[in-house]
Image (cartoon, rainbow, N blue to C red):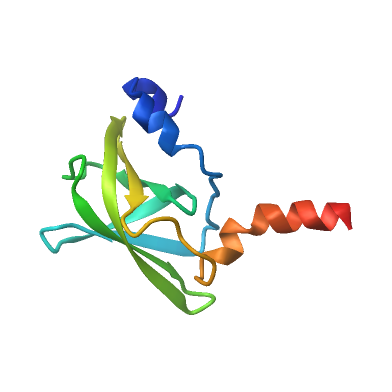
Length: 129
């Protein structure tokens, strides 16, 4: 069950209309909080409009808080910083799940994330050809 389903808020359901992708294990991420503190997270999934990040243990964030999501791919020697706003926070067991929406709108093509976001499209195109 996704965090949106447990919240029961129709607005959250609308935010999940974008196709979500999982990043490979070599890609690391952190979020920089408004306080300036940096916290390492795992990207549960990502789309062109937002991401779900997971923090082992607690994370002191609240809905509508502005954060900066930093994603790094050390194998490709690339990184990107994405301003985001917290949409929801859900604590499960020992994990904190945080839903983020990118503050500057959907990611346009031309970032290091294209290789992950377009993977589904490439697979579909190669089957047709």
